[in-house]
Length: 392
Image (cartoon, rainbow, N blue to C red; front, side):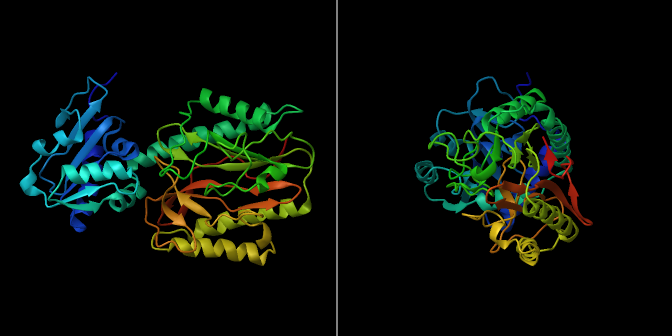
């Protein structure tokens, strides 16, 4: 096993650190102390317990403050017992403002770090990190493409995993098993504590119309009130849709993809809504270029659904989601967000999932989700499984 604290190629390390430092400098943040697992992974290529310390000054090297695991080595690494050990290791005369991750750290942790850096101006660095991570490097795009290829291969195997009489949970387990055997890491990393999900969300029939407390495009009652989302034991039977939204984390970077299957024939309304979803994706693929406001893509999707007479079913029926797409990468809910009040503007190198979905009472959920890279020519798809409703 490689025990070096950084596992990324040197040129990638320099690029990522440089992006963060440049934006810190623009926002007047002299020093940032990063503790969030996802961002530590972004900055080093591994997860460890501790901190990454970055000065806005490009001439001052990055420092790695590690608590666990033991045995890591590398330039700039220091083992610490507690955050109070850190100031003695810094060039404090170069620091007037300290960037802390107020958006993703516990309140008690933030208070402790503010006390550690008493006399320095505490600033929320979460927006800097979100912005930098939303624009992927060529190296990151390579990992996402790999995830997309494997993800697609797994979805192409789904029809062969079905057996008559299955419940949604039994079907989900077979899909998850196939995915794990193909190398899925199993982790659905989500920013913030208000959303939870296991490896996949399989929705059969009217369970898709069960509202959930989480901000996902689709719901489901789940198996237990402790995780009220997804499969609930519904038997797969003729006339219902089977929506599969399964984890695509094969490289530490996640693709997101949804496809729909059926048991027998569905209603004409269900097929109409599904075709509308595909049409929305085609339109947004053309329009999703650098410089367009994310809310414009959301508004276009809503406009198409309305023109098709499908507004009542769009992005939910009993309870509607307030977005039609989201950024993806190390976490499943990165920027930009395609929502009506989003202030995000698309940039080349953004990676987004677009999921215009519908819930048809008595049938279930229909519609697709694809992952895309934003390019000068529009959105480039990463997930290529067949998009039509496939009868099992």
